[in-house]
Image (cartoon, rainbow, N blue to C red; front, side, top):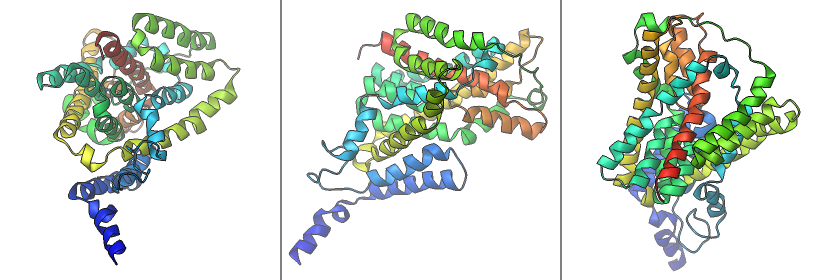
Length: 375
């Protein structure tokens, strides 16, 4: 009987707190949003279940907990802690990405650059709130809606905030369909949302092959901090476009990225142990991340409207929202919003141009912080 009572007193049940209950509810909400609402299930299902795994308290010394050295979860978490998973994700993204639309309409790259305004405004805001400059940089990247880049820079510059930043980055990626449409509607008129854009011109294979080579060399020389992420992104794209490595490209954009996403999502979720995660700093990070994401979306839409003032070939400002790097979810949101106004107006291919530019833009922004801020 004493052993039985000791088990309940000092085991998981005895260690269970209101904070753990709250996190279990949050994990179930993530699963509900993924399964019932279809909000980026490939991300939210692993993260949501990971939250459940991470919030069953276990006594120290059992070698089970994520933060206990030598446990299986701890070994898997090393991929986040050392920034291993994000470059692998970028490899898969590169193998999936078609830069043809962006190359056909280079001006749309500016929308991806404009969306990075949210990163730098949030960076300044975090410093004003008292965050150290390294933490401010890591939090600011959340505004690009780029989970892998958020993890990569946090692992270097703010490892003490890694769990909160990782969860915030991936949460806002998954919640793009909730956050972006109200911002788009608030900043555009019905007439603007009905703008039809000209079809993209075809791009030669020679240009598609040359682009990742030239773009990588240019970006890496200009911004060496972005070398790892941009290098893996364009390497993946080279596998896709070269025409001689289809097996490797197929693996990179299917099973490979799926495996990394599963492990990354579960470990990100499991890192949210209530005793470490439910802090004032975590709440501030989620708040600033939401502000950053709204500013980034608004910046892309607003810059598209500015371009229309000087351009004869009008841009539908809806696609400016795709300047964040949530690929391809942000582009799909633009298509859905545009189709509500005119079902025959297909914006998704146009939106992919700023969307993929946003991926490069967020990596460049992270590289800028890594190159200029000591850590």
